[in-house]
Image (cartoon, rainbow, N blue to C red):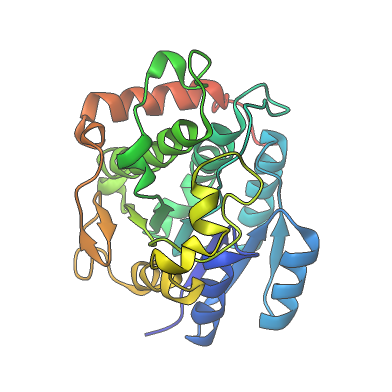
Length: 280
């Protein structure tokens, strides 16, 4: 089987970098997308592959990224929306939105939609990196996506990861008849720099010796389900529109099964990113 063309965001570190190494080793064409020029360029040089830079706190950079990707790749077999993270105190982006929401959900939502023409003609798979935090902390209120009423880093992150799952489900509902296959997954609790610069209680798990006692896995093991989904055939190895943990369909937040919420989140997201605008 010929190699796939794969766009991988959040590729410069953690499971993104580990997945990129494995996918390139398996013979795929992987375009790395990252925020850090040093890290992304260094990995691209190691893997002898293309790289693109974009700061997801700025929609203008996401639009410019989409334009560059469309110019470079007339076919995209897999889009992996892997960029994201948990942040500290509530901050606003250059676009006036809560940072966790924008980086984890709205920027990937915008990028995916701007690439949709290419993705549909390619019968592409769209893979969203989610988290068990969606189940533990997530509770989405469409009237308060910025969490202005009661902000915490954990809730903002849980909401954003739940949004990743709802986005995959709504992608499947809206675009499966046009050849799109979408899925969300949890990579496991991975030993990375996650939560290192936040006030979240999760930093004690990821950034202290406690982590060694809680079964944190290596980035390579965390990347394994991402690679499995990217290389797999939708409808055969995995079921579109579902959420996976350990390569099996898993239960998550009950809100993930709310079709009206998924549709409402799509419409609200489209409004917030001004989806009707022409890419810059």
